[in-house]
Length: 385
Image: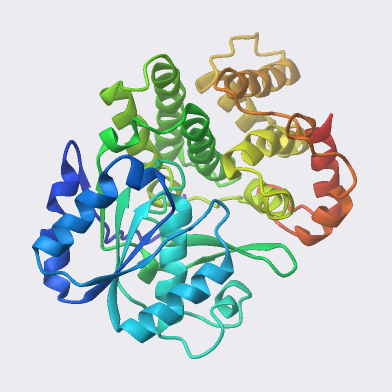
């Protein structure tokens, strides 16, 4: 196990009607708030009206940045930065899922920076100061509600890049599983894929003596898989929704990655995919992750056998190493299929025409196995077939 320091400042307020505590969480900041959200869903559900009423009733002044879309765009970040500066915003409240939260984080980072906020994503600058952020989570998926990370897409050049800094962890995250009842199941499934990928990016490591975090990862993956099936059967199953919502946070609040080297190649490869084709991130990951596994398993066959046995319940004889690994990957693909997610590029209408272009942009990623453009192209090909 590697040495590490773990600290997560985000206060989690979890449970039924937890959004009722929003005003009391905002009052100490005594600032004008920027309310960041997507589009119609929080208005259709009544959550928007509820939040606006709470803000007005408690004398909390606010401005709005709406229209955030999946694979959030840099242009909305610029719009939010200018709004914060012109309206003297002191706190950002994100109401939504990962795209909304990531946009809020990028705005937070850019407000007090004199240069272009994209500098952070290109490694040209390091965060020195930012605005505080709070979250009302409506889509369990990205884990951005308590992570230091964000991902933004720059339209020019179709570049999807990430940035991470501990100061960008939200101050609080309100998490009411009831707010997820109205999500279309496909959106729920994409979120499930995202959180599984966050765990697997940490699970597939060459760091030795990490049994505690191995078991945490395995338990989370098993819990997500079993509760996903329950939610599919009954979208209003509060307990299953709660399990998935909490698992999404634990998958990406950094706890399960402590003491071990993590990979992140599959995310880098998928980012190019969704930047070019604008597919749902979770759907991209359900396509890319099994292909990545097929390409890299020889780096540590024992770990892939462990995954197959402990997570996917494969019980082949010990001599059948290759068969065990492939069966584990196959069962993962079958799970994705059973919750309505694609496992091949062809299933989402993507052909081979831009594979080389994307492979070159994603070049040199991953730690479990360092991948060059040639490796990444092979992974795209495996995902196509």
